[in-house]
Amino acid sequence: MKFGLFGGARAKRGGPSGDSQGYGDFIDYVGAAERLGYRSIFLVEHHFTGHAQVSASLTLLSYLAARTSRIRLGTAVVVLPWHNPVLVAEQAATLDLLSGGRLDFGVGKGYRDYEFSGFCVPIEEATERFDEAIEVIRKAWTSDGRFSHHGKRWRYADIVVEPAPVQRPHPPFWLGAGSAESIRRAAREGYNLLLDQIGSTDLTIERVAVFREECARIGRAYDPMMVGVTRGLQIARTPAERGKALETRVQVIRNIGALARGPGAERYADPNFTAEQDDAPLLGAPAEIIARLKRLEAGGVGYVLLVDPAPSPATLEAFAREIMPAVAG
Image 1 (spheres, rainbow, N blue to C red):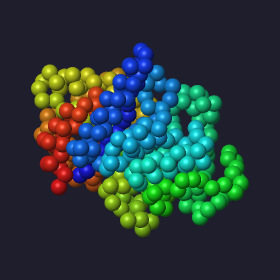
Image 2 (cartoon, helix red, strand yellow):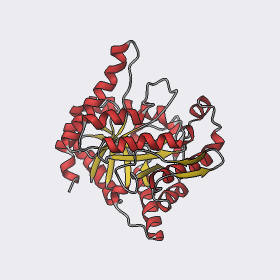
Image 3 (cartoon, rainbow, N blue to C red):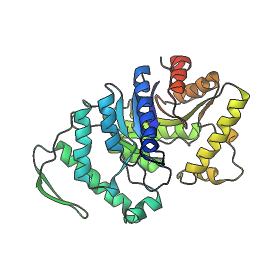
């Protein structure tokens, strides 16, 4: 198995020094991950949350490109219905150039109502806006010179997008998906797949199988590195640490579970649901975490993106030293 990171910085309110500290700590965290051999960092994009989540993922990744040399830099995801696709193509290609071809370009159509209303974009238009935007970006990165596009939302006449990305024909596209239909679409349309951190182990294995089967059906070569499975990471060595980790996990479920969609999502809204019933996170002693990873590996998972609710280089080091060797082959 191979491992990357998933998440983002948090800017603390309270003045210039407070605002920058959260980002500074996160940049150091990513630097530690690269030194320890982690493969990637995928950054979220969210707006108007009140929780100081990353909103300008391409900007932060560009800074990380200058501070790192090997770790891959991913978006998870750029929500295309909110953006001018040509500007996104230019910015992402610039990042790919600056990083020496390390961009993993994750895209999605969005799902949070308040983000769409904040941008004055009807959520009912999300799918059609996404489809047209990705068509424009593909043209921008694969056209030999100038191109034109005349669509419902966007029209461009005789333009050229510069710079060209380093990776050819373009950086890998990643799609966040959960339903069987959207997973099959990802396979058919050449995307790699990002799976969420709250899906149960059985559901995650089932989703990987759907993607793999669709690849086989259409004749697309499958590689386990085409599927990134996000998993919460909380190493707990004592009963007290376990209790605290379970409390944190409950808060995570409350924060994102209400927004979860797809098969099984309704259980996270059940007031009787407890963290003990949740087998998705890598939570517990190292031996327990290794057992959960081996179960995922047996189900076809080869690439895990770790989500640390309190990002710490010490946790990364412990995982790399005590857990990673048992499943890294």
